[in-house]
Length: 635
Image (cartoon, rainbow, N blue to C red; front, side):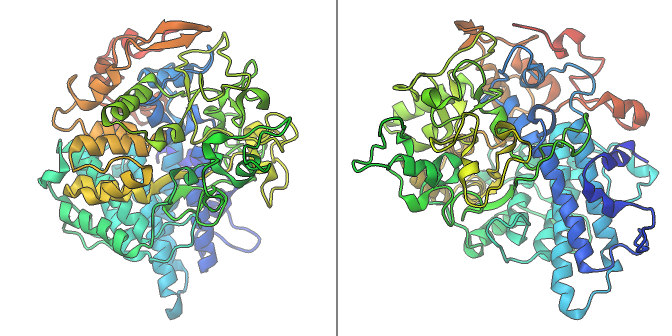
């Protein structure tokens, strides 16, 4: 048995439902699940894995944060001691088990999915419950596909576990390209065919349209990264073989099938882009908007108060916390949701799940918490945090260049990034403190913690003034009070994937129109730029870079290798010195990308446990000189 699966018993109380010991009610694995409500409990346990990942220490747990750090859009940064995030950015490691946590967590999620899929018919389903059974089963298949997708994108070839009790032949790693991706896409097909189309805005559950969207995302990565299809709009991507299982008839799935799935979302999903891009992000909340309109001239500049000018021109009805906006908005297909339920007593000291119900990237991407940063009189309305994973100079410089050439301003740039040297002019200003590393002069605005003049103290967040708030479950608002959804799939992505797959620019033009930028004809370069700007800091950039490297494969001339190496020579601030030049920690970004193909090291604890059944990825094994793959203290 894979120890990685038994390790999941360390997680949350949701594991109560997976116990094999009889209870006083005589509920055990022979009789569980006994009713549809039990399957609901299983699904809650399956979805909770996303909270375990997204709510823990982000440099230890959260793959989508990792993929931003590993891309050319973020540095590792943080303080001198924040070595985990910096090692990730340079594609090196501090220890052989540094990247273990998602490996264990995601297999825990797969295990829970397998148990639901295998045992769902222990429930004596009535005729009128058939649709409910189909929906619940479809969610189990979909979530298994999602967790396996993340596993393979992180670690490459791994064991494919599709049984609750793991037979010996499933303990050996298999080809992601030839074995795991066919299963992932088959699971998404099953989810697509089994789940219904109903959606409650922000209810947290997948539906048919969510499965169709992720079907496209998985297929596009497989076709680009593994099959080296450089431009999908040419229509020459191969079909992929499917696995016969409930909801999936087997056979093959073609590029045309993927396009039809996305078109079904457009035609029938009732999703639409929010009118204002800023509506998606918590800095546009109505409480902050009110502070910008709290006197007759609308400036908000009453004595002793501030005004956040960036959102002052918005319609109040478009604010983040208004109906159809923000959490549960009209373009949100799927997301990780958070709530005020974190507790220091959840989990263990190693498995850092105490904050699992808090969107902890808000703390990591908050302003570096030294000096006056995060104090309202200096950096209103943005709060303090760890200051890790700061945006790179590259994303700002590249974006500005595109704006200058095109002669326009893209609302998404200042809607995504804080310009530290200019945004706080008129206030006390941002402080570059002496223990900071790799400060680019920018911070992530989308997820940055936000406070109000109405908050009683610094380090508070606007959520404490939102209707329905009780009190911080951690008694530490800076760490505990972050409840913004982390988007996993937005309707904008559906539109941009359709343009990339078909060459039809009309879908992309809708996204451009919302941003107020010129609508352009199709080109791969246009799609690449649009995806970079639209989804900045949402966890998509690194794997987009990898699949666009298809024509050149994993060579030093690939899209990803060149984009990563372009970081070298940029001027950053470290130790308060604004003249530091970025360089790779051990060799070069091109070499580390070429050697690793963008995969992380498999944890040595699991390799040692499994012996030759689990093989280390290239770039991390004995064939790679230690000095190239091991963290070096630069600062």
